[in-house]
Amino acid sequence: MTNPGKASRDRRTGAAGLAAGLALGLAASGCVATAGAPADGGDDETAPSVSSAPTSVAPQTSISAELPVPSLPSPSLPTVATSEPGPSSSSRPRPNGLRARMVIISGSSGRVSWRVRVPEFSGAPVAAEVNKRVRAAVAGPIQRARREGRRDHGIKRRLDGEGTVVTNDGRTVQVRVIYGDYLSGTAHPADYVTTTVVDVARRRPITLDQVFAHPTAAYGELRGQILAAAGEQSSTIDRSGLSATAANWANWQSDRTGMVFTFADGQLGSRGLRQYAVPWSAVGPLLTGYATRVLAPR
Image (tube, rainbow, N blue to C red; front, side, top):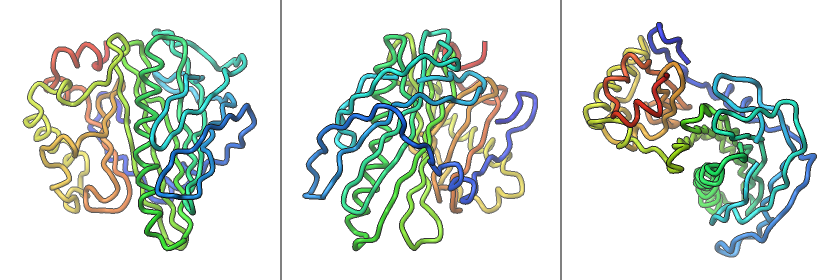
């Protein structure tokens, strides 16, 4: 993230860094419960499981340190029961009363396996909505890996994911999950990202059409900010990945420094995820009144 007084900077994540960051060596040491797997084209599938052993989240600005929730059904994520964590000295309720701990969603389908570490919340009525949205976001990459796995001719494919609570400030809860899709025998994984932003008071997601007063014009302004932040690398950016469509800007988060946009693997013309922070001084004039109240720093 950039400091408020500094220009936005390129936060591109290299393949090696992502692979290291997504290596999930966490051993499941708590209660593990399983549920029946969904029927899907006759694949031999083990029941996905969630390991709910409490883990500590390193202190970060606007990030809670502990995480639990009700289980939620999904085509790729069957209903899974989790147990409440024991007392943890790192568990600190945020202003909205939410607490978070990390759990692991894992499973397999044929030669495809997945292991995604995500936050789950408890302690406030909005927790169920946040957990529902995070689970739905995770289901997308899992479904994609399974579809592609059917065309892999028996080669093993593994999806790893690591979630981060970006903001939990009493107004919004924001979660980012970065994934690495590894196909055996290939030099690099395919990288993906999903983001979730939920309004705590309204208990519903915040979408870009609610963030920007004039979305098309806002995307054009943000395009210039991204190119400026890219500096010398801007000449290599595929401008079509920054065109004024909501899909190009869908992976966003906010914190005290500004709005952070993460661009998909290959979206800007090069391999790997690319991430840029745009300061509030540039974003502020583009926001709706609602977005200013729930996103901008107080």
